[in-house]
Length: 158
Image (cartoon, rainbow, N blue to C red; front, side, top):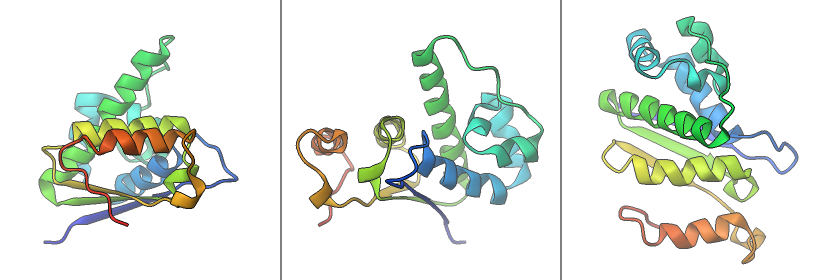
């Protein structure tokens, strides 16, 4: 069998949190097997449904109310996204393409960093495209790319 290709794009005119991940995960929620989605929400609840409303429609599991603790909420969200991608990768390899990452919001960049660290044992290849001409030292992506150089399994292609 083949793999699963998920694509999400950042946009310089739309500053929606997690936008590239929302696009990619909604595509996964539309096409993943029912039992995979059921296992995911049984284990993780409906957290990813906030990013991918199709997950909520397909499983009937509503996202839990947002926690008053933003850091705890982010940890839950990131863990749930990693869980869904990992579950899918056990059935077929996943290629996650994030286009125009130089326009990504801070939340998306934090999720990207978390996934790079968390998915090292999963059959998930994350490809991020960006315009290096749009990056200066103060750009949040510039610092993250420097951090990625120290991560095992991260390659930069020019």
